[in-house]
Length: 166
Image (cartoon, rainbow, N blue to C red; front, top):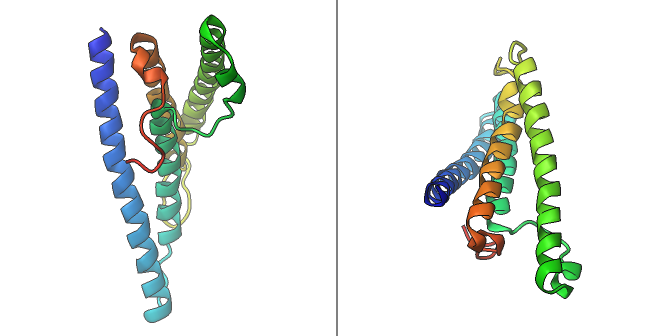
């Protein structure tokens, strides 16, 4: 079972990184297209801002999940670093359980909100705002998987790489 969790977590992260790169590239291209159409062709495109916002929200949430796996979120760990042995381990798991409780609450209410707004439409694209809101439960599902991975694989309890790594 631990090997399955590690493999699943690895592939979810790799796919997420591919999507993150593609979405960031799409945001850049869409923004360049918006500038071109607005200022060169004098014909602004209505849907550009909404698509950029959707992609940005997804990049933020999925990126947060990937950073959670790699333990690269900003944190004040000065006090934890001062602790040794069992106290350090206990505090680590208390913090992780607090994180998990927030993740579960965000997952439940994000999923509920996403389902509740499915029939609605939003803006020029005539799409449901659920496209925005589903980013939260998807990233929370990823983080719950990564929490389980931390339980079965002690090497995932330490930071991997640095923030600039992708």
